[in-house]
Image (tube, rainbow, N blue to C red; front, side):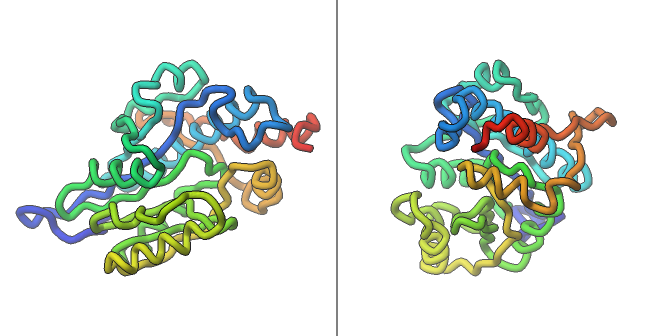
Length: 254
């Protein structure tokens, strides 16, 4: 899938897909879920969501050989924490450390780092239990029609950002809290002269209300397994949705 203008020598540009994740450490991740959940349960949700996202990206990549996947982690050099928590480590992803003081700085640095002349890049988080290859397909198609794409979440933010132009101006939006992040991001893109398209809306998972929204979504009962590795024909079962259902059955979600 060639999304961008030709690079040097007329070669088509690459499409990069970045996954952002912090280390899944109890008490330091998904803290908006605690209480009612324990820090350990919140960590397990993080791990399950990340495993599902990595598997979905791998599945999407399997039919699109020009996609180059990357995992950007924080804190730097925290691979042991990921492995210890049960993350199925993605050996087929390029591994990088996140750099920067704010989320915007870290996203801008990551996108700038992987992009070459004529390249395009998509960036997503790790808390997307309803993500499917179709969502990524739709976002990639949207990026073909514009310089930059944002895919929205119901709370006024976005779960995906992608661009074919200089990424840094997209993240000059001030703070990252509140329900106006998308509005400020769109204004920043317009100020930078980027044309903008929108990808599909998707529920992310930060709060207890988000968990209930995920479990109430019609798609949650139809999402299938994800591939274990590029060389494996045996799919891994989804982790996040079964875990959330177990927590609900145990009365842990309020």
